[in-house]
Amino acid sequence: MTKTSTDPVYVTDALIAEDIDAYLEQHQQKSLLRFITCGSVDDGKSTLIGRLLYDSKMIFEDQLAALEADSKRVGTQGQEIDFALLVDGLAAEREQGITIDVAYRFFTTEKRKFIVADTPGHEQYTRNMVTGASTADLAVILIDARKGVLTQTRRHSFLAHLIGIKHIVLAVNKMDLVDYDKTVFERILLSYRAFASEIGITNFTAIPISGFKGDNITALSDNTPWYKGPALIEHLEAVEVGSAADEAKPFRMAVQWVNRPNLDFRGFSGQLASGKVRPGDAVRILPSGKTTTVARIVTLDGDLGEAVAGQSVTLTLADEVDCSRGDVIAAADNPPEAADQFEATLVWMADEAMIPGRAYWLKLATQSVSATVQAPKYEINVNTLDHLAAKTLDLNGIGVVELSTDKPITFEAYGDNRTLGGFILIDKLTNATVAAGMLHFSLRRAQNVHWQATDIDRDMRAGLKNQRPALLWFTGLSGSGKSTIANLVEKKLHRMNRHSFLLDGDNVRHGLNRDLGFTEADRIENIRRVGEVARLMTDAGLIVITAFISPFRAERDMVRAMLPDGEFIEIFVDTPLEEAEKRDVKGLYKKARSGQLKNFTGIDSPYEAPENPEIRIDTTALTPDAAADLIVDRLIG
Image (tube, rainbow, N blue to C red; front, side):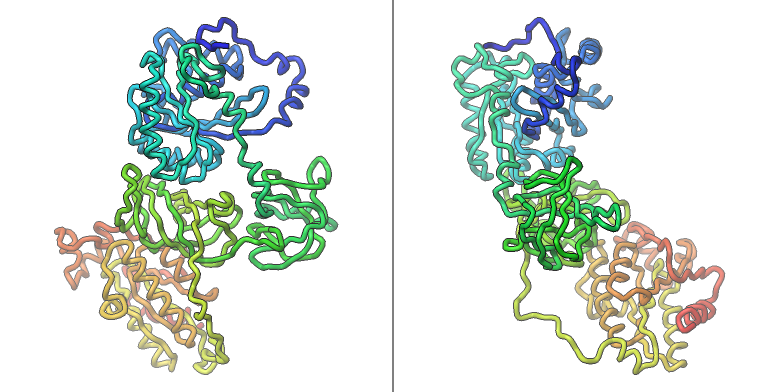
């Protein structure tokens, strides 16, 4: 049968109107394939999806009428139906004839259900493409037959392979505009195969199509008698769904929720990431390592004898073991790893560049931890596949990095398990998602390096000094009076026979941190080192006093997290910028204003004032001596 754009009658599935329950029952047992369409701008991604929706009878009469009206008003196909308008919902997309956001659409055939993501072709929206690809089993890479393989074709192919999509369809579109020329198709196929082999794509299916005319979409077209492969829908219906392969892997389930409706029931709810589980199976709770067995597999429709990858269930356990959200229940004899240092590939998705050394929230499955990312080992040029030296990653940058978390997380390599290997990074200040990542492997520390336990602990050292350890963290603009007040505080503590040590920002940069500059990354490393030194000093029972601009909240919070609760005392020396400039005894503000001094806080580098400091000093209302008295009283009192 030949499919053309002139098919006369469009009728939706009559069973929907006659018996919705029967319709739902009919489709309940069908497998689900998630796929994306991607490629360069104007390759016809939205048009193809619109054609799939139309040909699968997933449009109702009122939608069709609106589509016909919109096609005449803002369409790009003259008086004919512009199928792209079914997907391009944003006003900006319709005005420009491009895709900006990721649009998800559902459709079904007699054999399978589908969720398709229409992803943008512009390079500036690469992060949106990554979002759509993160849950896909298959990628349809579209190529305009007139243009051949383009830069964005290579970029999206690389990203699809990087994200772990196993099935690739090369859809050479707009064959109607090259008179269905077999030579054009074969030339594009050879060019793409050469590139695909370089990035590790060894198997893909190439189909010549016309999304607008409908050639080789739902049935083979008479316009391409030289093509002997499947039509696009036929291939999509036959390809193996990823969940089938996941069922053969070891059992893993990330706990999303502890289900406790009453005193007699305690279950652990989540979706199976891989494998199978049955009542009586031995399982291990990670990261604690406790073992037990599965008692029941509970669902809303009753207990199951077996659950498989992709199913969401509640497990009850035979023993009372500690298990909560973020833990992973796994096969007892084949558990995943737990680690706190990793190598990973990172796709940067924020407008602001990555700041090496800054702490971000890392979310992996149901686990949330604080993570610090180091400067990239290298950045990947997607166009040439070269590995480039880089100090950071900018928007849409892709690089290989090392990162560490503040506590071990349960994981598997992304290539083995996308659920336990894929993560996102979230900015702690704005809560914006800034990156998506794929874990490669853990970085094992030297086996002969261990934490050495000592008989004399921090409480005993503090008791010998008759004081409570504390870290007085002075923060404020340059010239605010931090060092002056900190010095007075130490003098007063010394007269009271208290054991203290003053870590001044300028003094530390003469020795410990002499190799650091004043970029954001260097400022973060400066504070991290000082925090580690201060923590060791409080372990010795000392009252540690620091005077640093420390302009970023995230880094001050990082140091706070290093110490026991209550020992980090943030002191905000609150001085207006104009007042600090008047006190410019070192002439730093003058140099910064003239451009001689770069990255100076308050001028061309930001200062993030504390939101809830333990102590706030208003230097316009208090003298340095009065401020020092206030701080000492708060500390000792």
